[in-house]
Each structure stands twice: as C-alpha cells, then as structure tokens.
Image (spheres, rainbow, N blue to C red):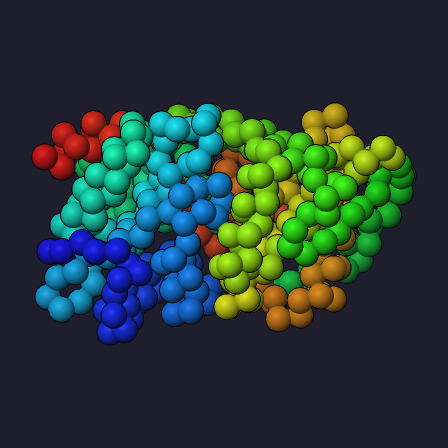
Length: 335
C-alpha cells in the first residue's frame, strides 16, 4: 500500500477517493446528499479552515483508493498538544485504516502533537477500529436534521414575540461572510463563548480567538464555497449577547449546517436562544430557498440546546463519536 496526498491524485484515482468518502457518508447518514467532486477538491486544497491546519491523504492499493484520511492540527496555543484524525473507509478496511493512521501519526508527531482524537460515526465497526488501538470513546455527538419547510411557523412567531417580553433591549445584527469591522471585537467575545459547550471527557482546552483568527477562518470558509450567515444579538451598547450561524454549502445546499448557537451566560433564560433560531429560520427561507434541509450537531449531554432543537423539529439523523488516546498508545498498538 502507498500513501499520497489527496490533492496529488489524478482524475481516476480522485474519483475512487470520492467514492470511499461517499460510501462512508451514506452509511452514517443515508438521507444526506452525497459529497460532490468539486467540494472534495476544494477540501483537498484546504489548509486553514475552522482554526486548524489540514492534511488529507489517500491510501492506494490494487489500482484504487482504499481509505481517505484527514488530519486537523489546531492552531491555538491552548491545544498545541492536540490533533484530530478522520479515516474514511477504516471501519470496513482495518488494514488500510491502520496504514492511513500511521501516516497521520507521522504528521502529528512532526508537529509535536502528543494526543490524537479519532472522529467518526458511532457504529460498531468504527468503535472497534479505534478501541482496538487503545482509544476509548470520550465524547458522543447527536447529529440532527431538520426539514426547513416543515417547521411550525406559528411556533417561530411565538419564539420571536416572547423576546419582546423578556429581552426587548436586545437587537440583532446580520451579515453574510465577513463580520463588519465595528462589531468585530464583540463578535470575538461571542464566538469565544462557545467554550461553554460541553466536551465531555475529551482532553481538550478552551480556545480564545482573536480578530485575526476570525478573519482567517472567514477567508478559508469562503474559499471552500461556504456562505456563512450570521445573526448576532447585541445589547444597547453593542456588547455581545449571543449568536447563531448557518454554513450554506453552495455545492450541495441540502447539506448545509446550523453551526454555532450560543447565548452568553449573563443573558440566558430570557428566550434569546429560541429567538435567534426562529429569526435565522425566517431569514434562511427568504435568502436561501435551496437549503431545504439543515444539519446540526450537539453533545448528547447538552440537554438545553437539544431541547430547543427538538422543539423546533430537528430529529436524530446519526450519532458520531470521538475516541482519544496519547499518540504513544496508538504507536504501541500499531507496532
């Protein structure tokens, strides 16, 4: 078997790699639209989105691609020890998965990482792959899907009206793409508030973003063909109250994501989270009618956000897991 960068594959082998990714995605979430070639080619060239550096590899054997592997290296100082691995095809092909993982470990160790999290669908074959390498599951995420047109419009109006009673002093700012300069400092604080989201038993630290981090990620998302819709709740002085975002996938709109939703601690229990969700739903229907389906992910332990999503109409579509161990443990098992 031979390991090469995904971006180096010629057309026939790239098609083989795409088929591996599509097969895993369909197995994990059958109702979601499949990855497109254009999207995967942009991902193969991506090196900076989501505050991570990225490496993508393919394992070749017998004239085709057996696995596709993805490594994320966090750029934050707080998590300089940490990397994330995703190995498409590993759950069905443990041999090629181990070859792919060994190559990812080489890249992680070259960047002085000491801990690696495996990420994938929480199914028996995936769990067997990671636990056989000494990595216990430390985090469980429910992936939920929403049929946009099926949302109860009366309920959404109710959520908006309740805000007038409990948070009349809060206003909304909206934009697509780059945050306006005059809101950037407050936006950084609201984005950093996502540290409150539960990470269960993962060995990972809070990340504190700055304006440069935000601008870099905005550029990287745009390069991937993602239009980011942002709703930002602010107080009378322009200070952060909370926000929600949707990542519109221009390659396959029905695979778009409701991304961050957060309300800062001092503003909770005022109906602001529901208000943000309702206002975003209204804006999405007007601005992006091709987005007929939304996905979102929440830790199984995040009862407050799951309750809002379920009330809105999100239903479980898949369950994903995160398995983590020291890199030395993986090395010993692979050896």
